[in-house]
Length: 165
Image 1 (tube, rainbow, N blue to C red):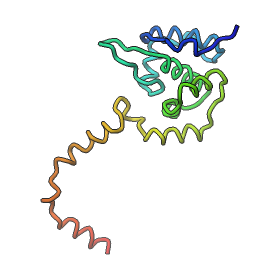
Image 2 (cartoon, one colour; image 1 turned 180 degrees about the vertical axis):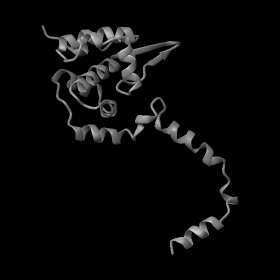
Image 3 (cartoon, one colour; image 1 turned 30 degrees about the vertical axis):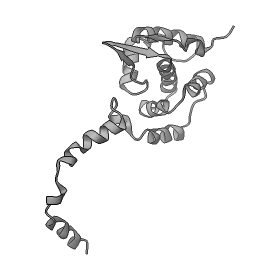
Image 4 (cartoon, one colour; image 1 turned 30 degrees about the horizontal axis):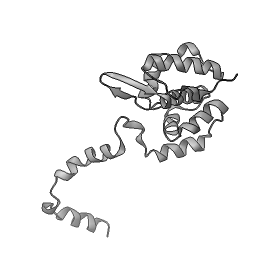
């Protein structure tokens, strides 16, 4: 009988649970890379680097699920295959559960163009993880909204306009 990754669709656990299950799955799937390197710290590192979505918080505890397992395994597979971590994260965030399952089980590596396109689809969110795009826009615009544009001195615009003539 073969191994089916989707048997773990109901997975729910903390970072240590995710690391243990990911290690077992990687072994069954024959994914390359050191299995001894899959641990709780690796899971947290992948979250901090954007390869795995941030877990749901239940009080003080982080709760990981099936999507996190797939992202971790796919991220590990792609990074171990030589793809840059900065490109893998945005790519994984654009993939559906089915696409991640296919990536892991079939080991069809994306090409660099697909990774590049995915980084643009995400809106360049790489540096400001943890906040969504709307939050970043609103917090960035707070200072701009405090300015009163009606009382701005128009002489600056006149000088700029004359400089371009």
